[in-house]
Image (cartoon, rainbow, N blue to C red; front, top):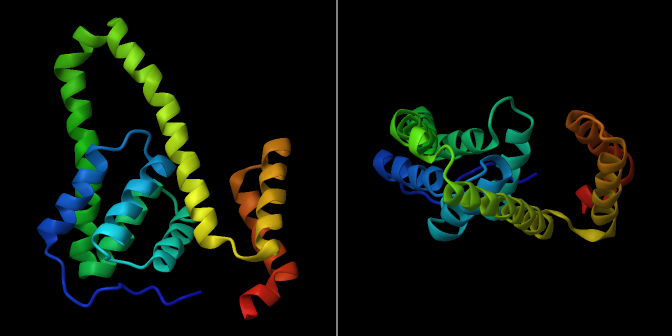
Length: 190
């Protein structure tokens, strides 16, 4: 696994970190995996704060942590950029839009929007968009992470097991780790 380092040597301002993650939090619906393409676009491609391999490692680590994937990823990236303060402002940035939007909806808009057919139709359209973003993130990550036929075959097998058996995700992760130790060791050595 590559070292988890930032791809930049200059220190980003705390305000830039917060505003970047605020934008991510404000313009992403669905949270979790749906937010990953937006985070990836901002921190890997646009700002070049971390490399793609480091971003992939951060996702692997944060998926094993309790809490929201988007929040944990933001914290990890913020810490890499500016230490604890960077992690805190990244967390504030990515969560503040949701809190603000929920407060506005609860205080003023819910009574007006509750039975509005246009609002319900918009949310009906957002659901498939969230699924599309999750699928995009999965395909993009698959291209970046899966190398060789063993990795692709293992991914397909684990996906089939997850769909058919509906095992807990932790069991799927454990099975993947064990399978990697047994059959994919030569890929990791090369």
